[in-house]
Image (tube, rainbow, N blue to C red; front, side):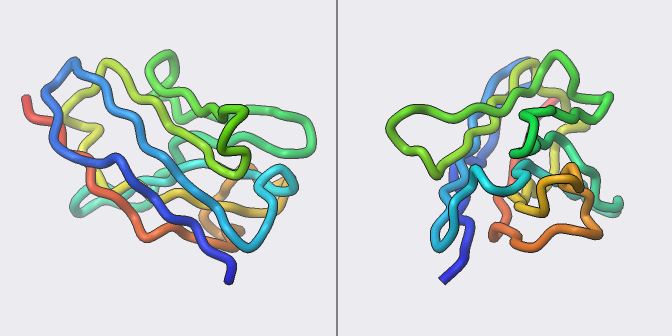
Length: 124
């Protein structure tokens, strides 16, 4: 079964840090683009960050540049992590790990697989 399982959301104070994880199964992450899309209350989906498999190109929302990064480790090769620093109240949202074709930079319209979502709440 193809799926993405997320973990790591929660409540954090403004200025704090949080790391989300996304474990993929049923396929190899390296063959796709993977990233996170978020949805704040009452707002539309926003692509936060994405790394393309074909060239390693990274795309960031302007609002998170310099604060968020995506990485992997050598142990859990089919898992990716979103490390968030300098969190702000406006980062409060449900964060979805997503996978899509290599050339689509995790655009919501082209996402093939969605994680279940994890809530990040940043208190002022």
